[in-house]
Every structure is written in structure tokens, then in C-alpha cells.
Amino acid sequence: MGDFYSTPVQEYMSKSLISVRPTASLADVLETLRSRDVSSVAVTDDAGSLLGVVSMTDLLRVAHIRHESAHEAPTIVPPQQTAASIMRSPAITIEESETVQAAAARMVENRIHRVVVLRHGKAVAVFSTRDMMRVVLFHHIETPLSEIMTSPVETIGVGESIDEAIERLTEKNLRGLVVVDDQWPVGVFTQTEALTSRALPAAVRRMPVEEVMSYEILALDVRTPLYRVAGQAVATRARRVIAVELGSLKGIVTGFDLAKIATMTQA
Image (cartoon, rainbow, N blue to C red; front, side, top):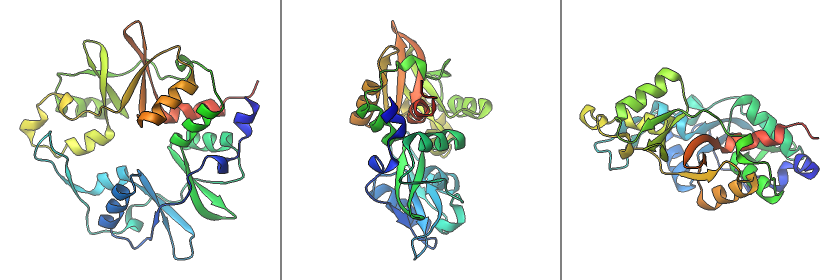
């Protein structure tokens, strides 16, 4: 376990930094996010200095979204702005020689899913909650899922409307809802789904939330050790793990929750 805490970030960080210039149009930022299959990009100047970060969520908040059908992918039309106009600055960073524990603490403290990695002050990579999953897997962390899950879980029935899901997220200031079918988890409805669903016609928003929910979940027993949780999440690219016991929903875990394991004080 000691090696887990002291592992340098450079051993698990991304191989390269995906970045755009501050003058890049938001249409170009969107294309970069899609073509590189990432959820955020760094914004750097010509000298390579880090200026900020733009995520897909940041872009969705300002874009015009055309969404004619719940069964079709939305058309995202960014405004005529640049990356500099919506980037989050300053970006949260860490030196590549610092530890995984330090990176995890920074993510937990700032409630973010990634930190930009610096080498002698220059941005060179990203260390994310998905990278943290690989650390947990490699170091064979046997802590059970039950010890880090968020519980109780806010749920919504699979047949309830999209409007109801949006309203519940807003009223309770939640990051997401677990969608259940007769108490069994079948998907999630998060802020991302809410941002795109608001553009649906009113008649479509009255349809069941099942039509727009995300299927990117795993359902695992609460006793499952974290290294197995991380391994399956990495292999399937699932962003959330649902903790169950005897057919009953008990909690939910994200990559962000897995990062918390590295912030725990060593015994």
C-alpha cells in the first residue's frame, strides 16, 4: 500500500497533452474533443505555457443544441467565440514528480476529474480519474466497494419523464440520478444528459427518461475489491459503478470516488 501512495504521477499520466490555442474557435475545440475522444483540452499559448482548460461540459453550457428526436444524437452548434472566452483559469496542476496521493488530494479538494501535469513548469500531460483507476488496478487495492461508495443514491424510475429528471437534478443540485427499473439500476441521467435534453421539443421531453439516459454503468456487488472494480471500469470504459447487494441498489461510485482512496492516511 505504501507504494500506492508514493507512486509518481509520471508513471500513470497520459502520454501527451491535447491542447488548443486561446484563439481557437469553439467549433475547432469541439472537433478536437470529438476526434481525440477526450472530455477536455488544455489551452496553451505559442510558447507552451498553460492558460486554462476547456471541457465538453463547459462547451455544452454555451452552445446552441438542436435535438429533434430523443433517438438521434444532438447537433451541437458552438457560438462564435474562442477557447479563451470560456476556459477555466487557472487550471489545477501538479508536477510530474509529485505523487499519486498529491494528485488525488488536488482532485478531491477542487472536485475535478483531472489535473494538468507539468514538467519544469510546462504542461506536458494530464492525470485523470481514469488514470487513478489504473493505479488502483496495478496496486491490487482490496478495499471493498462499500467503503467508498456514495449512499444513499437518488433514483428515478425508468418510466418517469425527461422533464421530471431535469427538474429533480436542478431542485436537488445533483450531478446525476440512477435510473431504475423495478429497483434495479439500468442507467444514469447526469448533467450532460440534462444539458442536451433541455433542447428537446416539449412533447419529446414528456417521454420516458430511458430514451436519453446513459448506459455507461457497471453493477457490482458491494463486496467487490476496488482493483476489480477499476479493472472492469477501464476495460468497459464505464464512467460509473453501481454498488448492489442481494438485488438491491446500495450506492454509486465514480472515478472521482476512486481518487479518494489515495487521499486516505496511510496506516
